[in-house]
Length: 446
Image 1 (cartoon, rainbow, N blue to C red):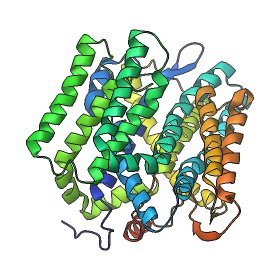
Image 2 (cartoon, helix red, strand yellow; image 1 turned 90 degrees about the horizontal axis):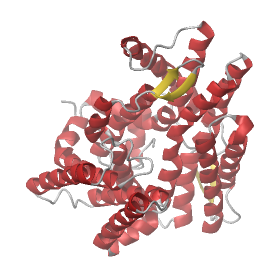
Image 3 (tube, rainbow, N blue to C red; image 1 turned 180 degrees about the vertical axis):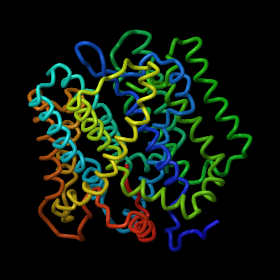
Image 4 (cartoon, helix red, strand yellow; image 1 turned 90 degrees about the vertical axis):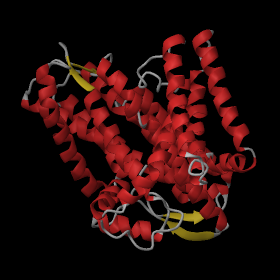
């Protein structure tokens, strides 16, 4: 076993980095398999909709809660560090929005350019529309995660002064929303984007403060069994879908229970994960994924657009989804996407480095909120309308771009140290990542 990396900050936990690195390729792989293209005329759709083996596999493999749990761990760590240095809520919220929203500007342009090229080559506009919509779907993570992390200062205060009331209040909100939505047909489900993911983020706070580590292993096993038991009850007697992907949009009580189960299982495995993560090869892999996390997550949709455009240009057939020939071509499809993503990891950080550095000024919180909301609304427009510019894609992109520029410029007042441009990665992935860990506890990537 290799020696652990030296000078890693005390408030950094390699098990959190490992979990995020493990989850990222799982999410990208799922998105790649979900991209179905076929029919006459050609259309894009969810290839795995109704695929029963995947539906049951989502019980252990639906790992979006892990992102928010680990994000809560990382965010409260960063906020406490900044607060300890005398920084303001506005400063924290501003740097979080810049890191999350700035990479969106370039990827929207890139995907839009590929789609425009496909249309210029004579691709059916209706196929382009359905394809653009499918490509935009992973963007849901950006506004939801941005809102949750922006609320970290407030939620951390509640975590400190009223932790149980906060957990129970958020869980109660999910129950009420589900009851009104599912029982009475009142369209309140969108509220659970906030309640469920804030609950998962709060679990990350508890993980950071060692609450789960102080529990007996038998108690954690009981928590995991109980959480999955709740899901079974919801599916069996309350007509919740057994497919956790169905429970994701919008999130339901099943996802909240899944979050509890996953944090308990993760806590049980955490000591072993920490030991495993110190191996040199594992450590290097973890931090490569960390450095390029945002690039991989956003630009794998661009990669799917490029590979599909290439297939159309070459006149290659699209096998019927879930057929033996479709499954036989999936390895090539995934490898092709991975190759394009790898190229993006080499090029995109250098392009993002051309953005002007954000000069930290004492920007009023109200101004930060306004610019942050502009980015959220912009991503929301792209998410709901797709990347196509002749619909509302240009409006969405413009809102994101204006919001990011406003956040970078900041407000009048005292200048402070530079804030690194979001998504920047230095040359030499492992070296740069290890240096980042040694000098700063802030996690890279998403």
